[in-house]
Amino acid sequence: MSVYLDTLRGRDGERAPVWFMRQAGRYLPEYRHIRERHSFWEMVRTPELAAEVTLQPVARLGVDAAILFQDIMSPLPSMGVEVEFAPGPVLAEPVRDAAAVARLRVPPAEEVAPFAAAAVRLAAAASPVPVIGFAGAPLTLAAYLVEGKGSKDFATFRAFLRSEPPVAEALLTKLADVAIAYLASQVAAGASAVQLFDSWAGLLDRESYARHGAPHLRRIVAAVRELGVPVTYMAIGAGHLLGEVATLGSDAVSVDWRTPLRQARRLLPGKVLQGNLDPAAMLAPRDVLLAEAGRVLTDGQGGPHVFNLGHGMFPGTDPDGVAAVVDLVKGFARRPVAPAGATA
Ligand code: 1CP
Image: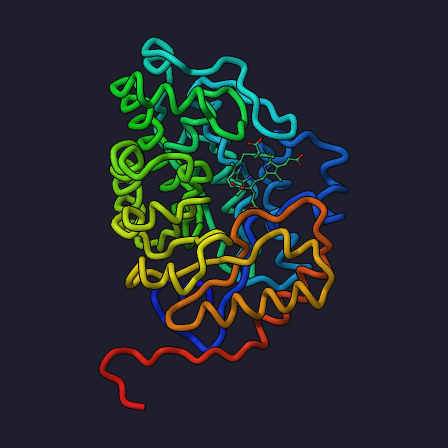
């Protein structure tokens, strides 16, 4: 039995499970040790290395779940898109017109980043905790494909959505098809939960999100839930979108640090909440960090809560501070809400 999976299934337990977005990464000396000898793509494409890095934070920190070490860009080469990391993703050729979208391949499931499923299989066989599979949400992947690299405002992408809606839909549909196949391959390999990363959805207004984001997300969420696996949806700066996010069908929603968990609880009835410690708090002195983490634990009460950051760990984070947060979460006695119908 896993406290993480129990919570995702809606059980308001006596303690919150804990894991961290970007828990497998550069803040860990054991990650940097491997990274010195291998490029990022080499690590991602070598199942033994990817599985090893997936499990590093479990061994060091005792987190309640292991997230697969890959990137949201992992499936793009199998669609015919060349990506390099410097350190963020950079595309050889942005995808900006109908011809480029038509050229994108939608490969059969077993050809979508097969190294990822192989890494899940190795990690799941060795892991004492559930392995979380993941994929980039169509809007966020499309933002990188159109822009060609990371950006603060993804203005080219937002202009593209407004000027070429049918081409955008064709692109988003292909990305959703690939995400479904990719996630199914991870679940078949042993991933027992799935998270969708929609890092840039918050750049859109609510109407554009409802039109270009939500329908594709609903299709992906339904397909994964059909496999019997819970789904967490994560977006950043998306407080204004929570009304739509509530309708996606996900089991859980990851909330960033800007939206108080109590407010999210009201806007997302029936959802498990994940989050939402400010990753910058991890860079503060220990007493400040633990006070902030305690506040998040208190706010997370009133329904099922998975403790996490509001966004990914910064590379400069001290692993000992992270370990102290894990201890705090594990020792915090929640006041669970009694299931409906139960008497006190
Ligand atoms: O130099 C290095 O070692 C590479 C740094 C790195 C790492 C460790 C990148 C490049 N990606 C990753 C791993 C990664 N990426 C994981 C692994 C599992 C874990 O969480 O521990 C995950 C889930 C991701 C997801 C990801 N990649 C997202 C979504 C989540 C988020 O943080 O918003 C996004 C937007 C990316 C793109 C990306 N890849 C890498 C970087 C530095 C970035 C973001 C910055 C940019 O847009 O330039």
